[in-house]
Amino acid sequence: MRILAVDDDPDFVAVFLDTLNHLGYSDVNPAMSGAEALDLIKKAPQSFDCCILDIQMPGMNGIELCRHIRALPSYADVPIVMNTVMSDKRYIDDAFAAGATDYLTKPIDETEIKSRLGVVQLLVSERRRSGIGTVTPGGQAPALPSYGFHDSIPMKRIDGGIDVLAMENYLNALGLFRALSVVAVGVHVTNGREIYDMEGGAVFGDVMLDVATCIADCRSRRR
Image 1 (cartoon, rainbow, N blue to C red):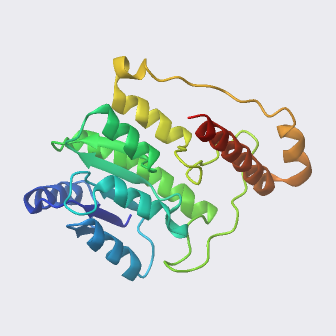
Image 2: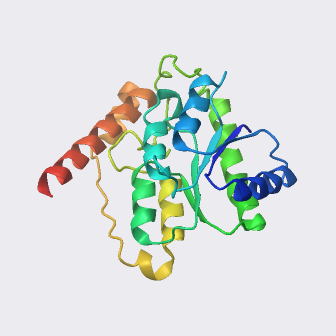
């Protein structure tokens, strides 16, 4: 798994790279700033499989960097893990709204990193099997993925949208008491099964994203 690790603290980067290497992740590319990270992404012969970002950095912070990475067609579904000392709810909210997949707080906990990156590795393996994210940087956006009717559909193209795994990680990052302040609302598409049976998984996924976009737009206009 090819990892891009971004942090402006050279001492932390040295310890973090050593930890990742000990866990078997040897293909790790460090960057000391958001600008350097984007330059590495641009010049990389193939997309990174995972990005690990600090939040507090001079110039472009990690949340801004996350938004820039998510805007790249070949990084729409690449796992992005925030690894930071910032534990306030507003940072957690902003990180997941920007497209983060997971959120870890420093200092380094080798057991936790091993567990979280194990999940990321499964995601990367699934993306490779499905052919998602195989375009090179600067290439064309991948073809629409095909979903099963009961599959979770990534919502990262929706402003502020997150997928099911990211939602689980968001609630875990908040903790029990802060999670009690979160309100969840379900929307049922009555002819969803009919759309899937008639048009197939690719069109179904795109239609569900259109529905989510309309809901997000309506919410934005009411604020």
